[in-house]
Amino acid sequence: MSRIRVFADTNVILESFRTGCWAAISSHFAIETVQKCVEETLTGNPADSRHVAVLPADLNAGLAGQHPVTRKELATLVLSHPPSGPLDDGEKHLFAWLFANKLLPSQVVVVTTADKAALVASNGLGWLDCMTSLESLARQAGVGRVHLDALALQYREDWLSSTKTKIRLGVIP
Image (tube, rainbow, N blue to C red; front, top):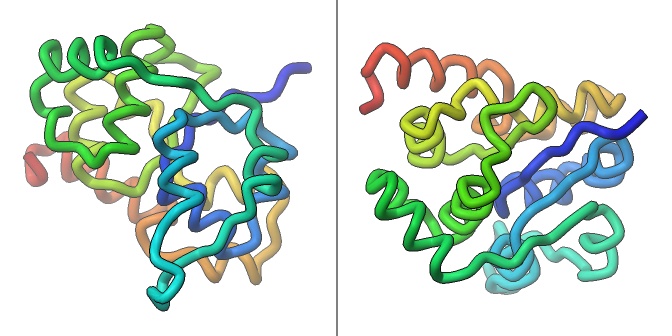
């Protein structure tokens, strides 16, 4: 049986390492991302108290794929869907790759992000139902309560559900 494909942005990858969920979710799911998210995950300011140090070998061992994104793919996304333009680089690259490869909407491919702007953009692309929380992925992967309780608010299922509802109702434009 093949594993569900999960496309993760930088912040979700960092949070999964910070909370100790990475090994479980990357064993249970086929975690994929784009090269920009890999670059962002492996950089940052080590002097920042919020910095999460990720070893390249640990990240690469858990990834089922890391995809390059072309300038043409970025331009096509932004020209076809202007609300995607202001997204952070990692989310923009991830969405550009998904848009170019026409993988969404899908019953067997999900995307995880904790970025409200990315969720709004996903709604405009018809992908909002494909968005899932890190908490949901971690639960499915058998992650224990201690690690689940360590997740920041925006990586939890109730936050995502509430945000999706607000987007659908137009409360979050």
